[in-house]
Image (cartoon, rainbow, N blue to C red; front, side):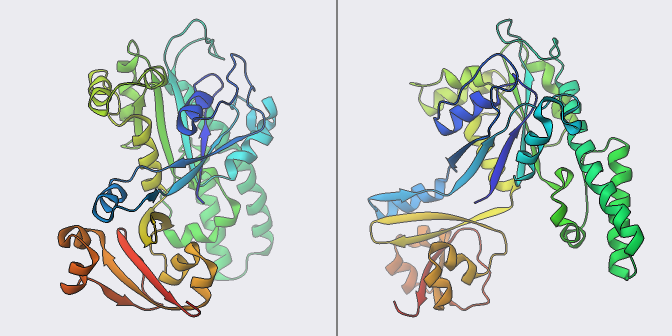
Length: 353
């Protein structure tokens, strides 16, 4: 299962965000390092297609795809040098597939800011600087080894990739546009700079406009939201929630919209299975082979794979049911080389079944 790490300074709302996501009740206090051991929760990914499949087929049970979210203790200046248990917290972030950076942009006298003032861009730069310094340490150790031993063309190319990354990080650029093949070469280093990142700016109704600079600083992977607002929306219907968020200039889908964006940024797709009383969504990386997808359902399906019947979600909806989809020729037979597509509904045929 893919993992998303909640990252940021202390007292920015990470644990409160985690509690809203998971309906957990992890401790939230007004001093740094309340969260020392990471908190882990499994979060359902919203899925309109699965709801529609449920409306068509009326299964008793709908099972949604999930992502693992990890609440990681707040970083501080010097984390890359071990300050504030920084080495431990950084190791927790390295375990993740995506960084969800929670940034504080609200005033609240009862929740002190670790650096006394509300300056979201400064806070963003502190955290990214610590991540970059930790990456630089790993890169430098690896380049030293490679310089002594690089002989082949591939090894020399590997060294150039690391040199270029070191140069970029040293100049303060916490991003990378490496080609996929180059990323694979240094994948084992598990660098922060290579992880996809989403920026969630925790606002209040009084400070939200101050985040325009942040929205311009980062691209469409930046979301304005408000934990204080979301925490008080129980009892409101969905239309009322959308209207309230919109009136404050916040992401209209709130926290669920951030979860959906995490799913997209992880480059995951969904396929569906219909069996017995359950319709289920499965999350797999884009370009997943049908045999690997079958193995996610059950290992026996992968080892004994024969073929799969596949229909696209849109075709099933247009036809109204499986019988009509089959009559219209929309159900295809696919073999072992098929790459699963987003929205595929799959029935696996396998030996022993």
